[in-house]
Length: 212
Image 1: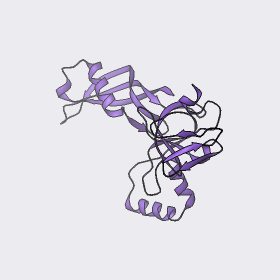
Image 2: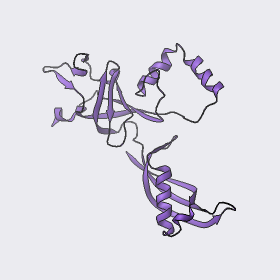
Image 3: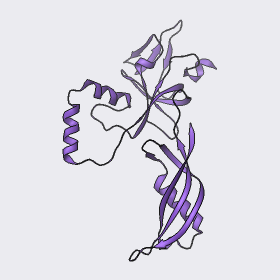
């Protein structure tokens, strides 16, 4: 679920922070820049793990800040496909179930990846697994699931022409709309930078209380 990723970056230290130890100032700036940020094809950066190398500080003319080349490692959330995780159901809809963790919300469980025999009950906004006894998948319940797919979406700024072209390409495109739903959003919303598609179809999956 968590990995260590190595980075090299030129970290800017403002003059007001020169009184701090270099390592402490670097730690603060690295966390401010990377913590809770998604990096394309890397994952969700959580916090600094350690600093491996610190270069000499350079001061640019007219700036006053010190720029220090730093090599460091970050703790990154990036579960592998097939990994089993635990979270909480945040909402249910006819398309499937949204799941959240303490630090990550963009998890979607499509209806196709639920147990066979599951049905959605609109009046209760919940999914029910029809067995000998009805087993409810309801909001705020603790759920165990398996990662099936990770999706990175490039959110780099686009020019007006690119946005218009994307809208034209996606207009009436059912596949594009389904992809948006798999990413846990809607056809009208911007997809999150990093999301997970998960399943709940095998023994031990589903609400944790079912198997206790």
